[in-house]
Structure formats: C-alpha cells, structure tokens
Amino acid sequence: MASDERIRDNQTDMLFEAILLLKTKEECYRFFQDLATVAEIKALAQRLEVAHMLEKDITYNKIEEVTGASSATISRVKRCLNYGADGYKLVLERLEAQEKEQL
Image (cartoon, rainbow, N blue to C red):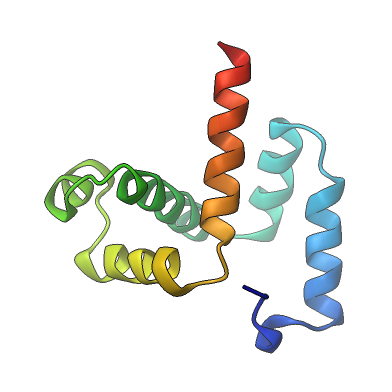
C-alpha cells in the first residue's frame, strides 16, 4: 500500500531525509532528543512494541500490562497492521531479520 498523501510535503520530505542520514543508534537518540519531547518519543516506541506484540498474537490484556498502552492505542496499532501502509510490517520484518543475523 502507498503512503498517505496527506503527510507528503517538503517539510516531511526533509524530516525523512534527515532520519535516513542517521548512522548509529546514538545519533538517533541525539537527533530525536532535540526533535521531540520524551513523551512523544516514548509514545512512538510504545506503538512499535505494541505492533511487535500484536504480530506475535499476544492478547490486548497482556500488551496493556507489559507496555502500559491503552486499549485505544492497541486498537489503533492493530488497525494499522491490518489496513495501514504496511510500515510496521516492513520494519518488524527487518528487525527480525537483523536479530537472526546477529545470532
């Protein structure tokens, strides 16, 4: 599925180009610390963890318990997994492949 045209503009292009220039996890920490609040970064990280757990068929109750995510957040992430742009799936597959390579 293609990305949502509503987010496409020059500013967003510049943001994504900047992210693609980051080379290490430490660079990511530094950039995102300047770019977003701690709460915003934690919310993004939480959503990715929720997606990871949903892909492993973990129950909503367990996901809420482990991540602290609300049922609304879990439902939103689930909807993205099922009907979104496949961004979560792309990243989760790559993370899993990277993990296997490191074993």
